[in-house]
Image: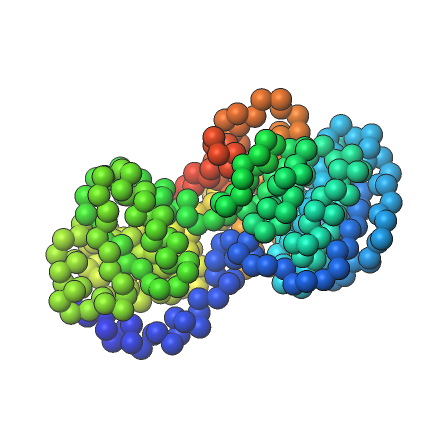
Length: 376
């Protein structure tokens, strides 16, 4: 059996450098904003910029947005647009939101923005939106920001991150791009496909560890026992041979290039599965045949809902284009949260997945399955 050792030893330095924030679907949701002064800014929907702005003027007391209070649906955007670390990502979310807003062409929707630079300004910005009359709010992006506003929630608020560690409160909901749910979905898919002994290959970085934990939990729920596991550092010689002798499939809890390194030395007839992390815009022929999940926005351009909305005006990375899609679905969900009295079990055929509101008040995403194929 071919050993992984030469690949791993030769690639460790590269792998450490390549596991950067931009490779993670929810990378901006893990970061904290830099500490700056809160800068609330309110805009009318007709003035909301489609592309990111480089700066925003400070406003000690933001003026009332003309016509906003008279709108039936009054959406408040609570995004860290002024943040040095999160501002660009927030602007992409807003770009997707605006694409959905303008494509909807509703005349009964008003939008106000309260931009801020760090979590310390989230609560002040949230209160400014409520003072303007917002009856539904989208944001914040970070868990810290969510925890700051959570005790003060008074209107339906769609946070764009997981509610993990946050006390669930009435009217607080969550839509996030966390990959944990993807790993659990893949575990269920492998069980449905009849696999009994999956081999989970993981690395030591934080993202891989999250995927490892989520997949293991999902497999335990379906099969009553944990999967075989192998650290890439130990994937050589007898350890690798022993693991492969027991496995009937492999789950790669890795990014695209890391997964390619491992897949290259595994038996080609061994069914391989992964998350959206292998859906990268580069030629990796060795990953051909790997089954993975990702959002309809990236996998199904001809889907009727996906075709409804324009693509970004400027080219984006795969990760940031996911944020654009997040903005689209955030707008669509905000409409429903503001108008439906009973949102229990709310569902949406979204561009980020088939969305369903769970009992934990978080929208669960079920993603389409794809088989990665490359022209040799």
